[in-house]
Structures are given as structure tokens and as C-alpha cells.
Image (cartoon, rainbow, N blue to C red; front, side, top):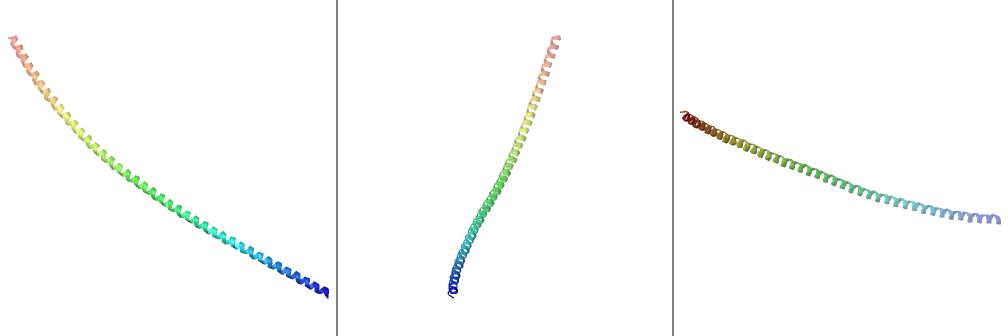
Length: 146
């Protein structure tokens, strides 16, 4: 029986060693599980932080894009207003030039009429002089012939 008692003690010692090994393995498994959960929580927190950062970047880029669109719209409106103002100024210039051209044409026509009137008066005067000189020549010729 002494041998059966030794076997029992040995079996109990082996059982105790197995229980200690199981406890150690269970503790190691729990530690590994806790580490995995901690890594998962850290990864999730990092992912949330990165997502928040990306979201903030997207919001900032969206705002920048909207500001660029608004600036472009203001630039387009300013260009349209400038173009409209330039067109109005050009129309006013064209109207003023037309008026000046019409006045110059009227002045030219008046000058031509005045010059023609002066020329006609001078021609009439010269015709009168020619008639008077002819009459004098005819009178002198008649006197000389008599």
C-alpha cells in the first residue's frame, strides 16, 4: 500500500502542478486578453481621434472651398459691374463724339454755304465790273470810230 500512497501523493502533486499550470495559463490568457482589449480600445480611440481630425480637416476644406466660391462670385460680379460701367462710359463717349461730329458737319455746311455765298457775290460783282468795262470799251470804241 505504500506504493499506492506514493502514487497518490505523486498524483496529487502532479494534479497540483497541473492546477498551478492551468492557473498560470489562465492568468496569462486573461493578461493577453486584457492587453488585446487595451490595444483594441487604444486602436479605437486612435481611430476616433483620426476620424475627428479628418472630419475637422474636411470641415475646414469645405469652408475654404465655400470662401473661394464666394470670392470668385464677388470677382465675377465686380467684373460684370466694371464691364457695365465701361459700356456706359463708352456709350456716353460715342454719343458725345456723334454730337461733336454733327456740330462739325453743321459748321462745315455753314462754312461752305457762306463761302459759296461770298463766291457768288464776288462773281456777281466781277460780272458787274466786266459789264461796266465792256460798256466803257464800247463807248471808247464808238467815240474812236466817230
